Length: 111
Length: 113
View 1 (cartoon, rainbow over the protein chains, first blue to last red):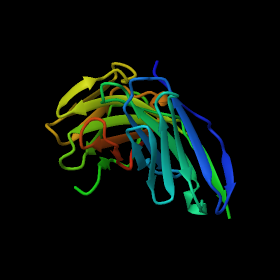
View 2: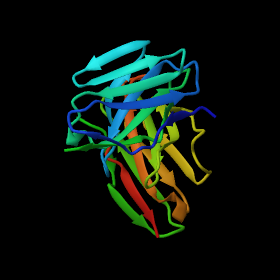
View 3: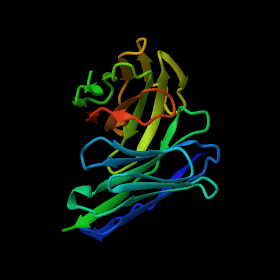
View 4: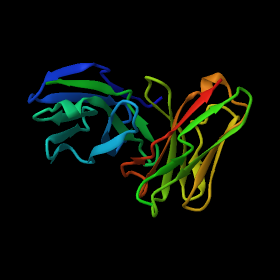
């Protein structure tokens, strides 16, 4: 059974701090990796995608991928209360069509 | 359309009844996915379509669940003889092709009483 593991949290950080969210996956052949944000009662929203080892930055968000360690992370700089949500790590299986979602990490940003 | 559209947004049904959930993907998105999310839980994969073909039905929980898609357009998820454990939010997503990120619809909240 292919798995995507995340710490369920909650992760609590003060406003302006860096929030660090982590994820590990079991399918060594995976090639596509995503982070989604899900506000309570809403649908997931894609915020980052990463396909190669290293860092990818988009505004306040940085995704990091280490395929050798089967590890993906998301850094949120200058965290804002509006960043409070559940963050879902998602990994597309080798073969490319089925994406497995982690259970999510709840983030609280305290004003 | 501009986004993924799902209907109905809410459905309350009696145990044993059949329900049909509809998803209209973003125009041009060839891949379409159905997921289920129970309250406080993660996303559970149900089925995937590439065009109107379903290469992976492995997530359908039982033979009470079926889905179809017309071309690269609307998909319907049908649940026959609903049970209380079917209560969940059913999410549809589409993507440009395999390996791309998804755009989710707003979901159908199904309550079986």
